[in-house]
Length: 264
Image (cartoon, rainbow, N blue to C red; front, top):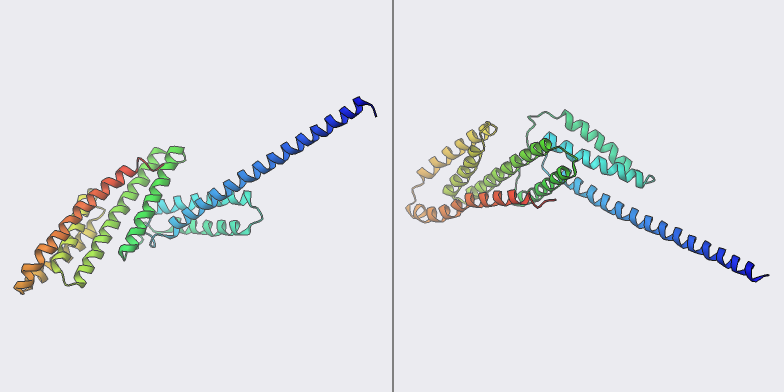
């Protein structure tokens, strides 16, 4: 075998080896990229599932519920393409499709699920922050219009107000259980004050009227309490505890507004 033939064979083998290594590296790179995409999609799917299932029944508006369902469906459709042999993705899509239709048929005046404990308030607050982050991200990506973002943001603000009112009512009930009538009146008054401030469109009038009834009822109870010692001791403590609540809400509301600028 001539030297030329040997060199040609070696050159050919080297070329084949280089091509093989290149193809193998490309396949491995694509595999890793697919795994990264899958991981990100599954994490996003989990996030949307938490948003979809973490709130009390009918707590989210129809618009926000539909947005979350559609976003989750979009993620599941991508997972179907990447993992066509995983039947759970198709099953989830089928369930979500039915859930979307049920949400569309939901009456606008459906009774909103109320928060029942401080722990639930804390979890709902976290979920609303996550939802607000996603909506701002969609706006920046151009997935929703500025008008849509404004609408969703307004609805989230209403939910924050409702969440705060629910928290005041929970605190009022706890105070009632502890026999702190003056504190009960203060918490109901704080809830009424907040709703009155935000009632320019009359959206909260029914709640304001109900709170007024509760305030009047417990003011009568407070007036009928004749124990001088308790009346002298509890007002200052109750007053101090309750008067800080409104400032606390305003601080949290300011923090919420600032977070809109960093959630991206």
